[in-house]
Length: 281
Ligand code: HEM
Image (cartoon, rainbow, N blue to C red):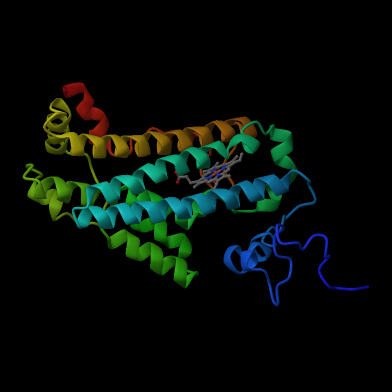
């Protein structure tokens, strides 16, 4: 049988079929690698979508971390439009991330049980990329490095992120450079600690929002951050709802109290002063 390209399909108006090695698409996308990374742990046909949804979310986490790092760098360089473009891209990506709950949102306990025990102690709690997202939002915690002690590259990346300024630290530094009275102790804080909300920062945001004509650029930045905060909160709540439907109040595979623990996490506000300041505008 001839391996030459089919002449009728290889006319000038059809795509090229003839490549010496792998296709340029494959060289760029590595689809062959990507589509052979699915190794279900049970025989249940429903496990595949659970695994792939988790992998898809990991990829979205990676893109979103990239956008927030871009935004942080741009803020450090006082390039607010570049930061806002990256934040706005991340808002669309967070929407796509959240939409990927759809295939898992209505699992029954019996469906989830069909492969749950095969997951052993595996849990999304051990997602290092999710922690990178949280660290960028200011939710730092050295103990979140502990599960990754056995994976040097992952641990090193997470450790670096722990000691770097978060996206919100960069916002506060920018506000200070703009002459706003951000307290010194916040600007020189221990960056490896969780950011705690400050009444002084709340007052600054309330002042910015009260005068949008004067503060247009900062209001737009504040709104982009608020969109991010809202969508992260939605991810947590969609996750909570999917978990409630799939396993009720059983303990999690990662060893937590399950829904009760996730409820506590879902109550947290991202960029807290951007929410509380609204009561004072
Ligand atoms: C219906 C399917 C799911 C159930 C029942 C579920 C259940 C849970 C539970 C009970 C926890 C608490 C920790 C533990 O004890 O394990 C948890 C944490 C977590 N899960 Fe899921 N999960 C599901 C799907 C997913 C998916 C698809 C992802 C995507 C990566 C994910 C990411 C996470 C993350 C990042 C945490 C840590 C949250 C935090 O630290 O606030 N989960 N999950």
